[in-house]
Length: 233
Image 1 (cartoon, rainbow, N blue to C red):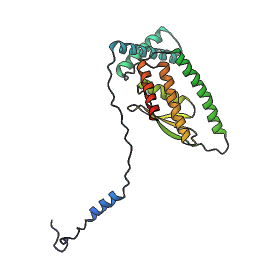
Image 2 (cartoon, rainbow, N blue to C red):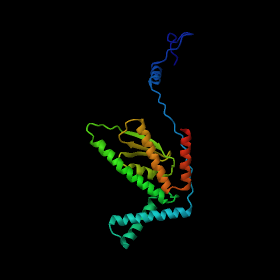
Image 3 (cartoon, rainbow, N blue to C red):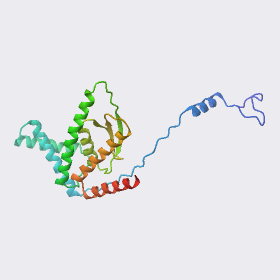
Image 4 (cartoon, rainbow, N blue to C red):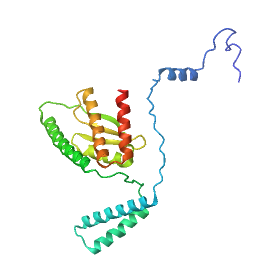
């Protein structure tokens, strides 16, 4: 529908926008533009698990489920073993879990170093949390930090998250499997140096886990990533 001639703008004069157009323009001009950094995530390359490795992992899973079943009944007997075996087969058949293969090797020296430092962290963190809770009038500041792991396997992500959560004062609030990032809630943050220290401690914990049970490929990846970060810094 053409507006009357009296409402049409003359030649050379700017056209007056309609109220709807004025509202849209005001919304666009007043809306804040939020820029979020994009994190480049490497595409996940599917791996083919050999048949022998798959059967080995299934056998280990069945054994663990049978052991848990007997522990729940608080008695080891042939009946509980057969019952646990039946339950394990039903669970694996109807509720298949994603394949998490163990391709590493157990290193006694690395395991001792991990266990020793883990006990030390438990004791020192418990003392720190107790002192923070008992200090009169002190209000601790907390923070949530993102820590991208250097080895992005599901097993490493799970073990590192569990170990971090077991230490008092730190708790995993989210884990991003695709990017291999842990989001950690940290207690008593006083400044940027505490944030850097918390990130460094998580990465050092990951390093001790890899050096204790990681594969050769994971060790090379760990060393290569550490070298790249050192060169960048």
